[in-house]
Length: 135
Image (cartoon, rainbow, N blue to C red; front, side):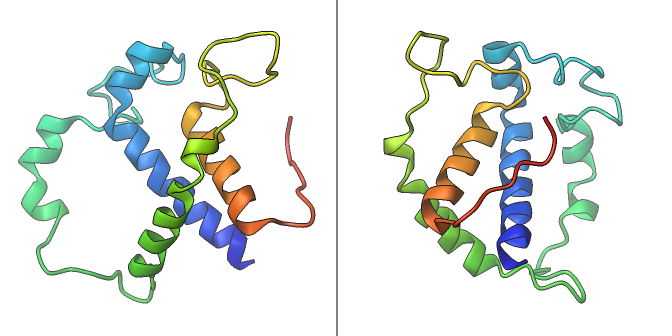
């Protein structure tokens, strides 16, 4: 259960980082998921930065470190992220399709961020079994 929670939290962190760099990803990968809504639409996964900056004082209250009743374990998350970063140099995935690899980062449905996180978590946690749910 702890691994699932940790993976979910790290997934959110990577998703947020992905949204921050979504403009680069959109240009780099041309993902249809990033083009579904216009950039300033409320349902867009890419934050509308002028709106965020306009509401920054309300959205990011200074001095708030924890959510009520939720322990985000920020130090633990940052430590795990640091530990996971060591696996980056060993990533076996090419950027473009070739005959040696079934997976490449040039993938609309399981993007580079997904692959990097999954690869790093599997290397770090070394689970005895992995069950894929879905296709």
